Figure 1: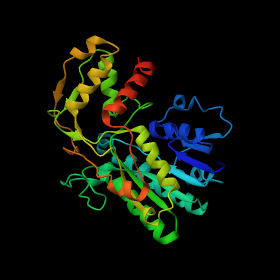
Figure 2 (figure 1 turned 90 degrees about the vertical axis):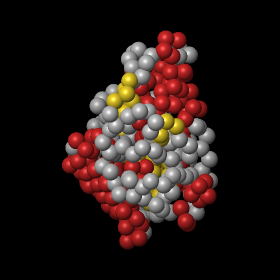
Figure 3 (figure 1 turned 180 degrees about the horizontal axis):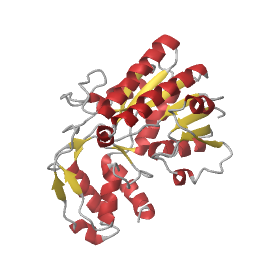
Length: 323
């Protein structure tokens, strides 16, 4: 397989997992990253791979984008500044990266005549929509600057499809977790953050009463969706968006219970660590659950990992790498 894939944000959590997967499948992979949130150590296993090229650059720089897409067949655009709280604290930088940077990548992909542009969209786009499960065609008003930027991505992608003929597919990620997810920093995702705290015998702090629920999505399900989106020939799948999730929901209390159980297999005392509760977080929605019917119908999506199955795998990785 000689096709070349550009993975933006290739040193990040999702990007580095995609990079490893597609190199193993025989693709050539170019990774673009500015290392604002990505890490070189995420790419250590593939750094010397003959089909791998790393470009240190920033999607806010159109020249970096143009350089990265040279001779590329497909783009898997993962680069973004995530985190609702970060966007509330610094909406300007979030917009520069997630909107201006996204537009730069679309322009570069169009000019390079790439075959398809698959991009990380977000479940935050559903905003204040109350209905469950979330279906792609029904969204609400955004609840954070981050959510606005990710919705704007979808609008731009649709316009580039209609106006310039660029094939795009957006993947609305729901609470992705798994190996290589960074537990450090002010905006760490909840699962690796809780894992790190529990391994250090600290009590995790849950925002609210712990009954908020999420459709936690293991990284291997996300990899499957990216591959299906990149390779599908189904005409209805092009220039649209898909929920990328498992299609089930668990509360934060459920989540911590599973983590204590699985980590407790390595260290029995973790099972007895108490949980603390704090105020709800601004911009958070109470419940999130995806309908994955559209992805099943048009892409043949068949997620393999529930929250519990994914956590069992992830906890082993965390135990080996984060202690």
